[in-house]
Image (cartoon, rainbow, N blue to C red; front, side, top):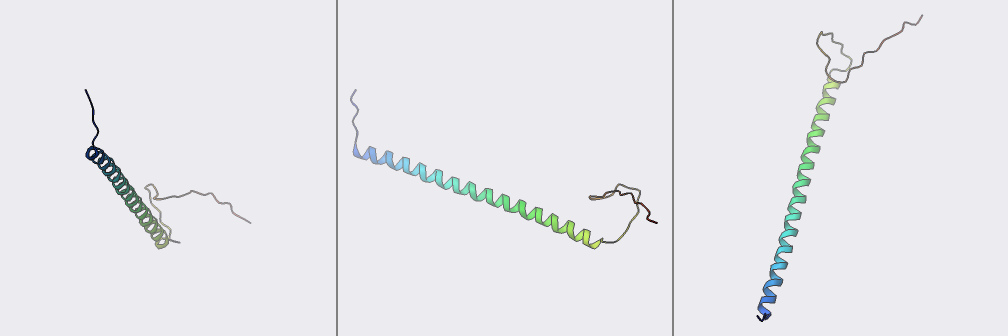
Length: 84
C-alpha cells in the first residue's frame, strides 16, 4: 500500500485546521461576551436592590413603629441605662 501526498490534500487539511481554529476563537469570544452580559445584569440587579433598600430606609428614617410581627431588615434590640 503506497500513500501519496498531494498538494491539494495538504491545502485542504490546512484550511480545515485554520477553519476550526477560527471557529473556536469565535465561539470563545461569544462565550466571553455572554458571561460579561450576565455579570452586568447581576450587577444592575444588586444596584437596584441596594438603591431600593436605601430609599426605603431614608423614607422611614426617624419613624418609630410598634408591631407584634417579626421586624423587617437588620434590627438590633438595644438595652438602655438611665443616667442620673
